[in-house]
Length: 173
Image 1 (cartoon, helix red, strand yellow):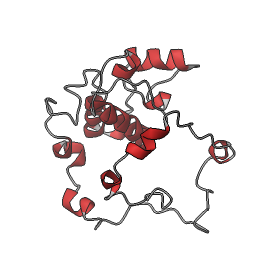
Image 2 (cartoon, one colour; image 1 turned 120 degrees about the vertical axis):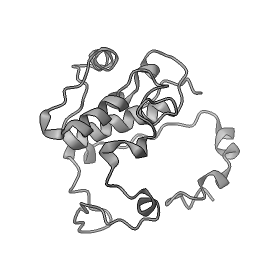
Image 3 (cartoon, one colour; image 1 turned 90 degrees about the vertical axis):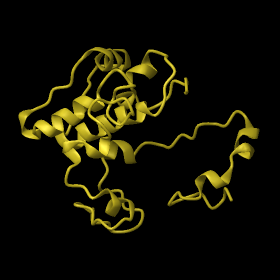
């Protein structure tokens, strides 16, 4: 269980906003936000500022247009379960395991894991550094690295934990 208040505001699960201890259920909530944005083209929760956005996350039900279909709406509803223990993806979810949800019926998970599936969309890139597929609001921002206050933290990280990552910083090894 974790207790830090961190994350991108639009994707923060209710239990983080409430200051409760949380587990991987927060990731399934964030996945729900991402899936909603991919299917509908906008964020499921809205507010003029962070306070209004957090109030929306805590109290409002997202709108599901009929165009997304019943299975998609049921999947999203289960991912937006405000009880983290019964949220889709968690062991106590009444809908069963996330991979068995009817919305994901056509997916061969073994092929996905083995990277044997061709992505349905692959953006055309002019070069390795081409950012033309991203909004200018993001590409014009200056990067700000979070300062590391405890230098011993970096030294305490076990590099073995990152062995299966597809990218690791070569300067870290």
